[in-house]
Image (cartoon, rainbow, N blue to C red; front, side, top):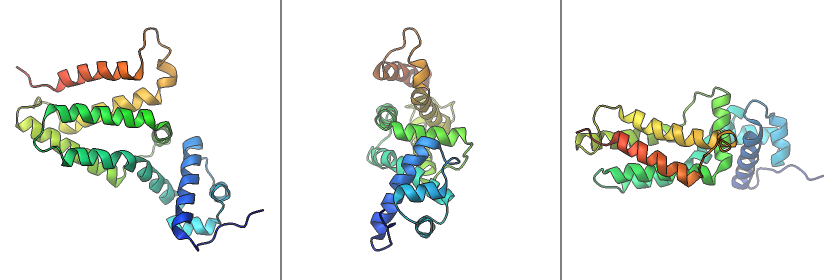
Length: 201
């Protein structure tokens, strides 16, 4: 039997704990995972988990942030490098989030567990990105590029919730008569969404 890992390589130990935790949380959610089970999976002691993360709750937050950071980094770079607001950036943002979820089914499942378990804590990265996106929408509205009679945060929420729900419920709705592929749905959603946020005559 292997001896549990020590703190001699703290970065590797922390990474192993994070990866084991993400795998278990994706499979079972937060509540069903026991700290002892997590320690066995990561091949560490429970005391090492406490040393690196403080508690199971703090480890859960770290796992959520790590999963979301994969999207956050690219989307923030897109916003910061965009220059003057234009409608194409909003379209590209929808596509980026949709494809991120498509390519990361584990993240979709992790997000679904947060909803099922009533986790109301939004991470700092989430808040920063929504705030930056809403500010971009507000500036585009001021320049007459998007309709002004809608809440900028609701614009962000609309496409985030639609993309998330598409993948969370796909096992059910993919069997509906006439339902198209991921890309066909995205194309139709973008037609509706972009027409809906366009300036009114």
